[in-house]
Length: 153
Image (cartoon, rainbow, N blue to C red; front, side, top):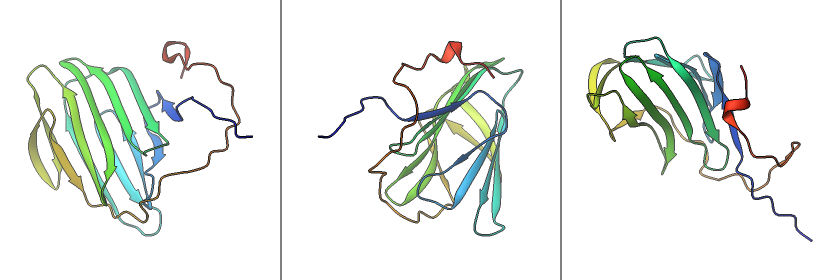
């Protein structure tokens, strides 16, 4: 007999500076509202990406989907809603900007300053170790629906 769990496996955090492992790589990312710090666990390699927007930030939330490894960051800044994902697809890692600001573009600093538009991608210098998706989970929780509004810092 096989037990099927229909709940999605997501981690979430509302804290600035939370660290998340990037699935199938040797990297983790430390996420702040205006800064992403990527570090390699096997070496001293690291790089940073800065976002340019006007603060303060409200409703800062980070989600990580454990099935496909995507990390989604979303929050409200003074000049609009910002949402982006760290995707791992087809041997590539990239930052995908879903939604931001009222002017549909944002300045980021990664090696040099770039202006990116909504629905654009930024390739990350991260190598994938494996392309395998997780097939088994150890679940030690309850099967209640997660209500983000009730989860406190």
